[in-house]
Amino acid sequence: MATILDQIIQHKRGEVAERQSLVPVKLLERSLYFNTQPLSLRHYLLREDLSGIIAEFKRKSPSKGWINPHAPVERTTIGYMQAGASALSILTDREFFGGQNEDLITARRFNFCPILRKDFVIDEYQILEAKSIGADAVLLIAAVLTPVEIATLGRFARSLGMEVLLEVHNAEELDRSLDAEAVNLVGVNNRNLHDFSMSLETSAELAERIPNSFVKVSESGLSTAAAIRQVRGYGYRGFLLGEAFMRHSRPEKACAALVQELQAAAPITA
Ligand SMILES: O=P(O)(O)OC[C@@H](O)[C@@H](O)c1c[nH]c2ccccc12
Image (cartoon, rainbow, N blue to C red; front, side, top):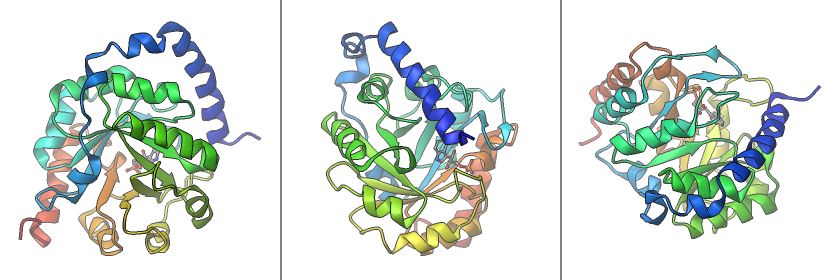
């Protein structure tokens, strides 16, 4: 049986082919954002005055189904930034995550912060598209890409001034995929994409294998200040949270509460 990842990638191939025929590259290149300099996700995550939280806008997921179909992008993302998040992650996959490019365009219009385009990148076209809608960084998932694809796609994004977050789940993916010219940040996903099980042990085990030249991001399954402090202790400087916020009717309020809790126990400006 095809895994969920196989299904997503298969669907994505058809989607990319269709978009490419509807919106050719020469149209993407005319976008306002195409010629502007992206913001550095690395830089924002390393800032001492910010929380390191990458707050995600995610309406649904294959593991949870609908999480929050109604939260408005504008109010939620502005609220995330006012709460003290360092950056935004916007799901643009429609079929499996209920997102759309327009969500990122809206987030871009109202926020001055790095924005990660969260999607399943398999083709250079999607990187040009990400740039044209105002994304500052793209995600490359090691589980669905060969080392050559990661090197090619990553270097291409870098050549456009964007940063690249490489997502890994285990040591094998990490060792075969790390390319310093293609990747700026390494994200360790605590969620096993094959069976959706969750373990912070993944972040613990992989931290020491990631060279310090890459900014380390712990992804998924984080919902408390204690968990964030735990993975910060392993050397992570970015914390990607989606469901913990989106499952609330006002996700931005959940983000504010968490940031406050983080600051209360260990002042981030001290
Ligand atoms: O909702 P969570 O458990 O806080 O996870 C957020 C984020 O890590 C998750 O949405 C994610 C991580 N990698 C991905 C790749 C594609 C889509 C989604 C993801």
